[in-house]
Amino acid sequence: MARTLPLKGITVVTLEHAIAAPFCTRQLAELGARVIKVERPGVGDFARGYDERVNGLASHFVWTNRSKQSVTLDLKHPQAGAVLARLLARADVLVQNLAPGAAARLGLSFEALHARHPRLIVCDISGYGDDPERPGAYRDKKAYDLLIQSESGFVSITGSPDEPAKAGCSIADIAAGMYAYTNILAALIERGLTGQGQRIDVSMLEAMVEWMGYPLYYAYGGAAPPPRAGAAHATIYPYGPFPAGDGRSVMLGLQNEREWQAFCAQVLLQPALATDERFSSNGRRVQAREALHALIVEAFAPLTAEQVVERLDAAQIANAAVNTMADVWAHPQLAARGRWTEVGTPAGAVPALLPPGVAGPEGAAIGPVPALGEHTDAVLAELGYGPGDIARLRAEHAL
Image (cartoon, rainbow, N blue to C red; front, side, top):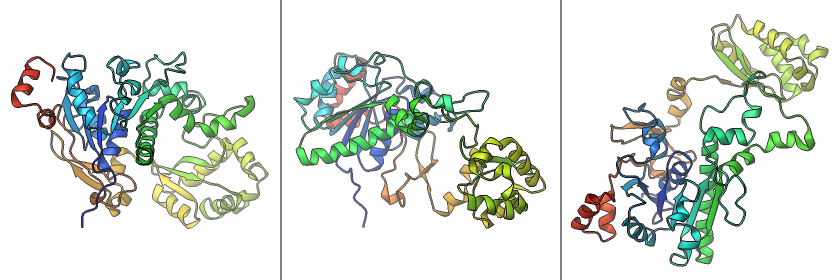
């Protein structure tokens, strides 16, 4: 018997671009919601043009936009308001991450919509928050992922001692998208109790600062922040990457003194090192990390990465490979758990990871990546527009 997905019957209209809002709405789509993505005619979501790495399609777009329907509509066209009004009359959720103030200028603020659509949930995603009661001086600033990584303090604690670094993926966008997603789910539950929609105001800055809780508290009261330590842990040692003799690196992490003793005896084969005064506590190991690093590298030099991992596993020391993207595509654990499926795209089928927490393909509504405007005619027909109406709107460049 096919599973009924939890958001079956929920319709989401989304005015979205880039990553944060599309990542949010993809999660909703794969829980069974119908997500109608409204895009600019001719060009669409500008993330479609970021690169051509997936058979000519953009990697960001393929990742965040499967399982949706694409409708083209020029939001500034005089006829757009009437089309959106019909869409929203059938919608449960509106998600938007347009430029600050753009949705309000289009008459799409929660305040403007709530009287006509009291059950509609409106989720606004922005860089710095868009509360009209407490706008703050930053409300209208442009906010891209790297800028928010910097503004939130993340960049200041990431990288090497000599140079800060950003994360290698769009973590500020992902954080905001996931907080939008979970808040929408909570709002749907609340609507089931009250019958009323609500506004959700998600700030990329606030999402990232929440993720920065540990370093913020570590630096509480003006204390020094965690030092930048590259891929190593800033305050626990040894905890980070170490080279093996075959040129590959192994990531390992010690959490307590019992593990330190096992590491010395069973991995380094130097049990006396466990009682060396320089390394007799985590604090001392952190202080003497350069000397200890040299000793570990020397002990690993005759070994391959696989042999190092074998010793670490035998000693029950946490470890991981420092994998490349090719390694992750071929990761044996993902294959063993059947975590890959396929999705269609305008350029052919591509592999796709099942959503975390979903047991198998039957547990999610994983659909294809839409071509620009692929569903425009079908959706407008549902809204009561006849073929002549659609042709006229297209001739007037509204679609």
